Image (cartoon, rainbow, N blue to C red; front, top):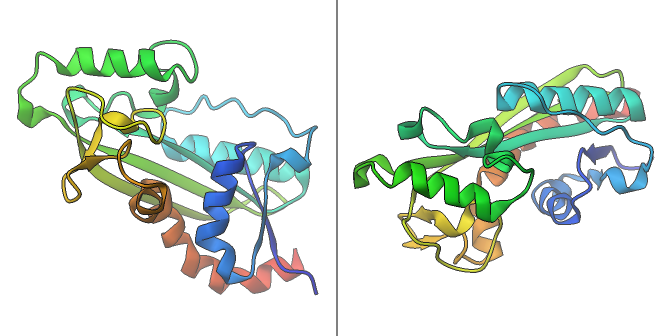
Length: 206
């Protein structure tokens, strides 16, 4: 019998590999959207991470007739009323413009006192069955502080400004191995592990 298969709702190979690193030892095969060139582009127009994760999982699961893991993630700064939040990737207006997004974030934090720079990354992931029904929903968070200057060349997005106090380094400075062990995505998927273990019989009958 072939191993249970989950499709990660992404075309990002690094993200798929990270998911496999965390879940692979459970005996699941993890694929991604590169094997499905006709997979629809899901419009992430939800106002919460959960809404976007659910939308991505359910729409892709129905379209592909597969178990799909959809996720949404971003940076939350309480002092900025939760911004950039679900708009993290397009905070300055254009999708994926890291430099512009960081510039806006740092400018908005500049007039605030140092104790207002707490932030956290959040990742919400939804697992939908081939009928598009969400069978699991998990969340992971990683807390840090936004620095005034970028530090390190690693990671992406807001990582060079996101300082982990326990390590005295930003995500831009930490090794990929350490980041993947403590990140919001790692924690969300860690919460999914026992659920998948318990759900394995469902995969054989779907």
